[in-house]
Image (cartoon, rainbow, N blue to C red):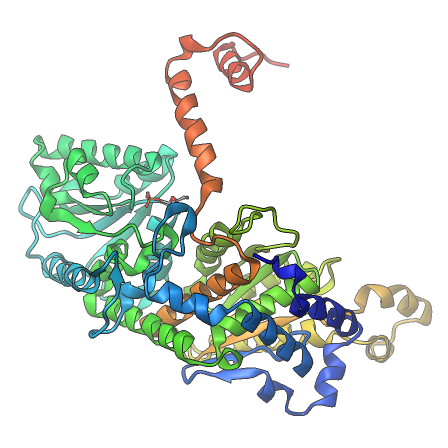
Length: 549
Ligand code: F6P
């Protein structure tokens, strides 16, 4: 496998970047009245505007040539038909099948998986209905009022982000809570407010082996059993979403209460599976179906559109341009929509767990940067926190703005102000301001000349800081599904071009193994060896009486 950075298309981009680094977005806009039009993609309910990226038509063409050379389309087709592209775990990668169309046939190991997918969705629908209508009763004969999802990583972040995003559209039949941290403070705080007789727990773990989830689930089980006075109550109050039904049974969850997932669903892409059960419980199954439909729409777009009109491909290539050719080290995600305030945290796992790798598919160390640091927060809050660095910091941080044209919740005067700020920020980042403008402004305000000279360097904004805007008509289940799938496919395309394995996560395994070794030494302090290891020092520190210094 020829390393991507040895390819002529990569070398051409390296040379071309030297030219583009001399350009300024202000001049590029001045020189081309159609720039916004030319560098944007209208997807009907979503507008992808990348005109504020530091690119020219030439850059765009060269990036497309790179994608073609890396056979992005071939790799995409391999993924979507179920080839085992998760090489190190020898698995297919088929989260797209979970939102497949009614006539779709996808084979894994010679068997069509779609009947199982549809059956699982049907089970979710009928279970959701029975809980939401009050037919499903707790141990005291009461209807369920609260659902607690116990899971971590993909088994938490996805459902939690979507629940939060759509909360204002809920009918409030059920309230959903999320417990992920093994720090007992979290589950204690959640349970304090709840009645065990009306609470349903969803133990969400693909492997049903993640220790933090199991510890939290055991605590919840003990809480329910203590209130009910018998263990039969577990069947009324616990369901599992997992690819390991046997382990769920060992935990004591009735077979009928286990919702299946599969090994070809990656943890961080699992919200489309039964892991999305809390979403269906909170909003009704039809709403969950709309989420799937939005994602399916993006899958169809990704599958059908030519590279140059393909939104995930374009986002992926712009990220590569910024990271590998313009030297960006991080990428900010800035939603101007309160409903998306957990979206950056969700994307952190999706992107960094997928592409935070430095070994290529053939096992050799890569000689170029891969995934940048993904971070962000809602825009208007960020403006009063970290935007200073975005505007005038010593590093350039490309930004993705996500903006909803219509507010989810109408509140007079608010949305206009939010939008005005978004427009102001993207303009300021791209265009900056000039010495002349600042001087004129300060003169108008009556500042003395020596004061103006002193202030000038601090008030200059060089601009030329790249951003992309994803403008949604409105945020709802459908557009959210589409947005998530857009980023999922972007991540995939980047992994293909960087030649890395995007679907494993060995980097999180080592710590898990070490923690298992350490755990007995913390619970059995006598086993501390008295040597100088960090753990022994900690044990001595804990055992020593507190002394005033
Ligand atoms: O953090 C590693 C990871 O495997 C994630 O990929 C996954 O989302 C999370 O742990 C939880 O795993 P599980 O659903 O098996 O409990």
